[in-house]
Image (cartoon, rainbow, N blue to C red; front, top):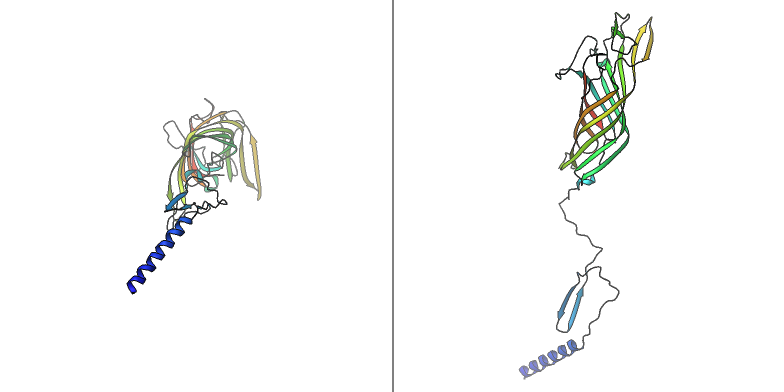
Length: 284
């Protein structure tokens, strides 16, 4: 009797399941509008199931940091401020220390300062290679022997035996410049702070034109501090052509070297010397 009852119950359940399946209708939620064809459709008997992707969701990978692209580092072009130590070299690239040069005190070292007021770049290879140019100014200060004085003529000549000796004595040359610098962004690297920085380098040439020059002196006389600035050409060449190289990491500071092609003095107006400077460039 029990067996017959169990069989009857099973037949009843099977019949009702089949009846329910035959009465299921496909219902589509018209409030959902998929943004793509990524909808997953399943069929179970007469039943159809549509699974739509959640476009608002985002996959988060734990314990992993994606490296930023190189273009996350702003191209600084050639804008910024450069400050470096300046020296004079002869045709054999030997640094000069002639008697008229006064690199004998930390307060009287030759130096070079430059900044750019107009900066533009052209992308040659995306995120990797660019040509930079602009308009800027450079101010060279050549330290002189403190016991001589420059004559106010159009050549480099001196008056010796200055009494009292100067505290500060320089020949200053000011240029307006146009650079043509190729800049390269390299691979990213992780620094000690966990930030990613890109190695970058630049190389090219800088052309300039002399817009002003002067001799500047500071001294003490009878306990009074005195100073004097005398404008003049002092035999300086009006044109400037320098080779420029820089390198660094990140987009803040860069080390640079700049050396001249052309002599700083006109022919027969002064010694045949070129400039070389090296220092730090703060990118802006």
